[in-house]
Length: 119
Image 1 (cartoon, rainbow, N blue to C red):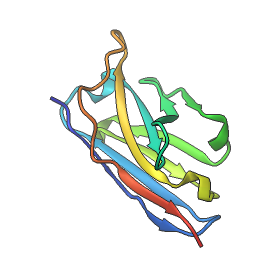
Image 2: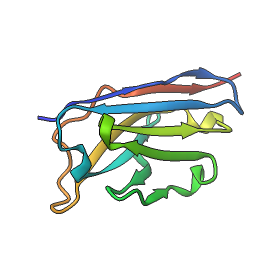
Image 3: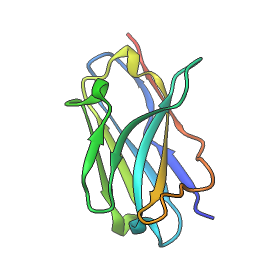
């Protein structure tokens, strides 16, 4: 079973930047579209950004122009570069994937990485 390990979170002031990473075990990473989600306290998990196996990206409106998702298939890793962070971006960030043919997601979530935007 694929394991996902997120990292790179932390405490940052409004306007600051962070780069999140998500490493996936196994050799099947390139067969998956990859997604970044976030979950703020008391709220449902929200899809933030997606990148297809071919590199096409999509973002939720609230992060367009500030966040950039990318992937390195050789390293089985997906990244989320976050610029101009806002307090509303505070959440635990998770990654997951969807098989390019079946659409089935990885069976488990990682532990996530906490992003806190506060002065």
